[in-house]
Image (tube, rainbow, N blue to C red; front, top):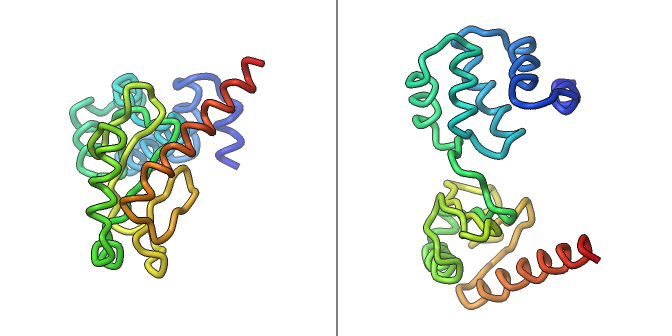
Length: 172
């Protein structure tokens, strides 16, 4: 029901109006409102932090402080393909560090960064919850199981081809 209401609103102000109507405007509403804004926008922009601050009548430093305390919040737009690398125990034991390093080399970025072309972003997560498939990476909710460092280039190239195909289709 809330998602439908958010979809009908126009812009950040409308989104915040719907969220405050749903959650209220007290301090206890801050985290769910930040979560909903990030879900809708993909990340928390400076503008979003300031708008939440004004709407909830909280100092921007307080809103930013809460958002930076929790690692679930992002402050940069994610890439078109958001890659999550599991570093949980099972994945760690099965070599997820070498997977992460291979991704960093292939993409030229570190965790919590996005490639210059906006195509890929990289995130390290504590556990994806697919321990039997370790090591695992997830790209936009698509799971790649028992990944090896040698497979990273092939996986990345497949997403590049997918993006190029979609772009050609939309231009054709």
